[in-house]
Image (cartoon, rainbow, N blue to C red; front, top):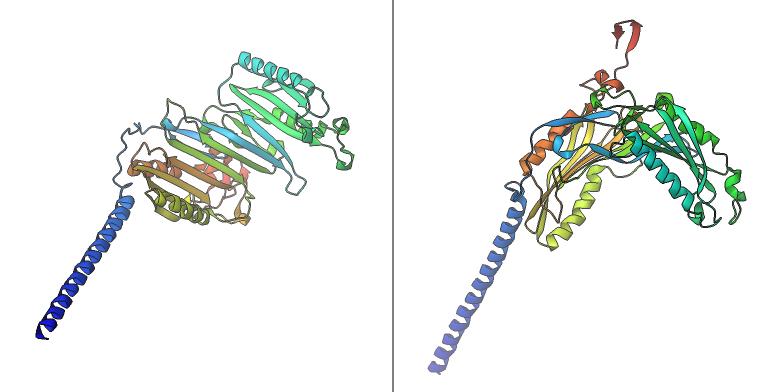
Length: 417
């Protein structure tokens, strides 16, 4: 009996020791996992701070002033000259508004190159046919005289079936070296008369739209020095002015040209929304939603997303939202910067429009060509330089309140705020 009790005690002691061993092993494994996760997260957060690109972009520190809408920006020369992807000028603030679009070719053009390009466009519209009516798209061509010389008007149909009842008017102009195309669309007043196979374009009167285009052609101006751009809305070398053209809202998307001779992996954009931007979440709210989804994607692939800055600041005395994100993914580091005008709608105007500015260094597939410190400095320097152009009243901004100070002419050379 005694021997049996001793044996039982012996086995109980062994099982207790084994249990302690297993418990210790489990605790060690858990500690190892926790330390690993902590190290991983810490490294993911700190990686952008100590990031050094393998092929770092060489930045000269030199800037060039560029005009975006009614504002000026001092931009690193490595970002090149801005282009315009989309621009619309809206006539009317009600539901029946009309729109004129302006396209400015990025490359400079000589008169010979301009003539060749317009002849090519005429040939293209003559050779294409409307799918429904089976007639050439080109309806008419006219040459007008303007302060810039002769301009070409082309009136044509669209080639798709759904749009045969619309008439497009397209004005080609050479302003200095800038090739600009101004477009507008005319429709039939009575949509009940629009039937397939019917030559409804013959019932459309394009003259009101073309008179508007002619007014633009007579008043559009060019510039080569952004600091000396005339009053109005800049578009990559030409200026639209609501005072002489009569439009109510001006919008455009500007972008930095990403070409081999400039810094690769840096994408810059400015979107001017006009004074009546759409309702919806602000930049910080949109960013939180985006980053939440991005974080799920990145973390699952072995990465980390970190907000470097998120909140409010000021540009040209205007309140704005700012969001700066660092992305660490598969050994690559990227930075995404964005700001958005935070002015209430009631305080917005042509001189205080809704706008967003973005600057990206790399992405989830390619690393940033600069360090975090360089990226932040480039961003802050650009934003701090953003101001109304002199011709648009840049000297009439109260630096404390951000309000536009209206000046009254008393006599030549004498003004009071």
